[in-house]
Image 1 (cartoon, rainbow, N blue to C red):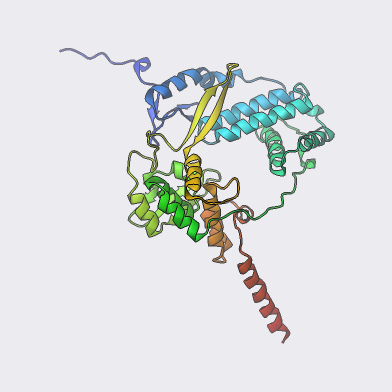
Image 2: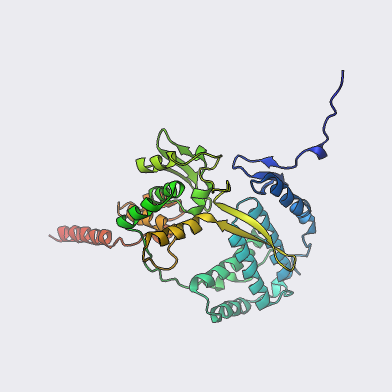
Length: 372
């Protein structure tokens, strides 16, 4: 009887096909994703395998008393890189972290020891950013990243003592009303959208979904029978269990099923992809390809709307929040948007002056009744 030769471990394909349609591999307890194309995924894994399996040993081993700013930033960015590979961090934000920490090191000096960073050094860093004429939002982003590095270092016992980062305050943002779609504009968008974009628009209005929500939505998250969708918000981890309108269900039923995800591009790719690109100097950089944003911008132009610059798919989420706020239940808006607190939800809510008028009038009735 002929016995079959058993394959050794080295003969096996090193990646596993995840239910999201991407090939992945667990390294040191963390899952890393390499895309949906088998050959490309294997090549990406081989390109990064040395780093993934050995980068922990390559970390600098400075003492806590003499750690330099560059050593700390390198450790933090490698940790953030692992989060990127595990799909817990977006490529765009990781690139923001790299650029921001480069600014911090350029200002304070790469080789300055952490215990020599003074409060005045950090305040001077803030002033340098302000002088570069960045917006308040960009200024706050740089400050948040700087603070996150030191908080992470103390929380993970990388440093015992950190600089007085609380002395560096964020800039005050004056929130202005932003654009929301009216009924006529919504109907126009729906009339010129294709099948998949029409379903995404309904999800944006019905559930307050953004681009990431639509791109990551799987058929397993949708209960067609009971007309509900269960999807945790990636940013906060808060589960949203929301009812679906009949119009949303009808649009989803018309969406062709091609895999685990609800939406795929015409080429069979996810609508949001993280791509690895090599620069001319040999360094690599992750970029995010968001096809939903591109398609929706074209849809607005096709509809002939005169809308403010920057109006995009996220405006549907803001529209949903504003309409929902008119119910008078701020906690319902918070749950709809998947926010951890009410403060963030208020940033999305626009044009609820009528509701405010009713609240003030009800207060007047209460006071006047008590006086009489």
